[in-house]
Image 1 (cartoon, rainbow, N blue to C red):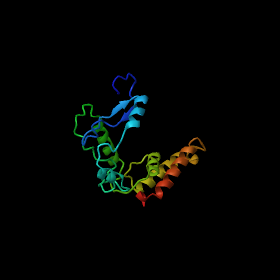
Image 2 (cartoon, rainbow, N blue to C red; image 1 turned 90 degrees about the horizontal axis):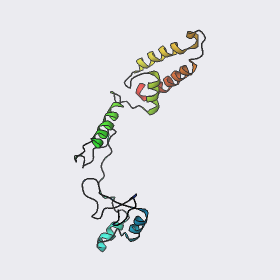
Image 3 (cartoon, one colour; image 1 turned 90 degrees about the vertical axis):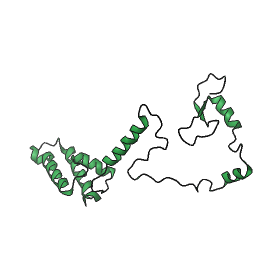
Image 4 (spheres, helix red, strand yellow; image 1 turned 30 degrees about the horizontal axis):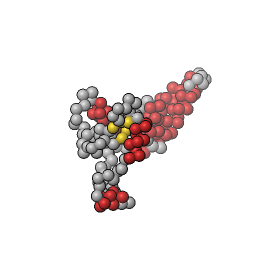
Length: 178
């Protein structure tokens, strides 16, 4: 908030002392009039030597820095400042939840499942680790249950039968059931 301004600060501006090396940055918040004023006089290169300015303006500036690898379990590592005080356990709990979700959405044998495969397993009422035999057995059971010939000609289960057939056709060709 700008000194002497009573308007709510809705627009974020960089901190006066630069970004801290660790922890969340302490941004400044301005109203529309003051953020426009700030942007008009802001100079990214203020305080830099000519060599530093030239280095920052190179076409490949920043590309020589090493980047961290993507996570292989579906959730990123916790932030380096993750050990700060988190009394509500908001950040750590969300991270643990994503890790557990990523681990819980994988088959024990490591075979891949697409989102369509997961939906088909749900339609058939099978677990993620079901094998080809369980797939066939469950398909046969549901096809018998919902087929009009087994229900005295009642066609009220026809939509459910079509969903079961489509799910079986999806999983039959899936790499996890090859």
